[in-house]
Length: 161
Image (cartoon, rainbow, N blue to C red; front, side, top):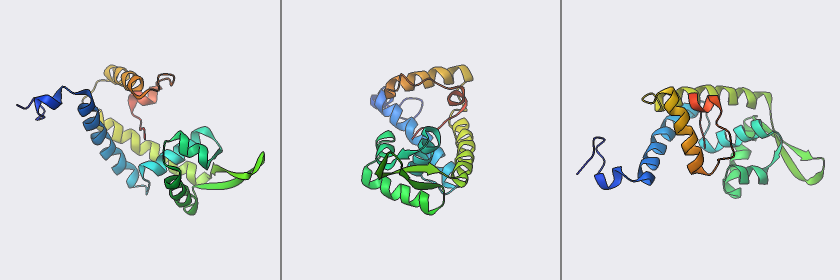
């Protein structure tokens, strides 16, 4: 038998199923929003990390956003070819390069943030503002990022890779 959402009752009460389904809905909207800017979720995650963390090695970036090192090479190469990031030698370790955003990359990131805020608003349109804060707090706990504060812009709309 199906619940009001049309899901089989055996699935409708499962946290994993509902989280996965919610992820698909949110991801579809986010992918469409950043796709219009020529970004993928992995490219956005890489760009967002370099913007927020500052200069970072490719290896550290790979670990931070949990993307396979072989895959991150293609992502970084693409961002570099497009002029959004540059590789500079690390002055403390000449064998290593640090990734830096360019003005063009920061401008793209700003556009992506605006597009994602609209996508998140659409995703969360049925949820009241105070309920959004609770949702974000609970998702943060489930995701294992309990030491990360929930920012106001996350409640009003944010993306996470």
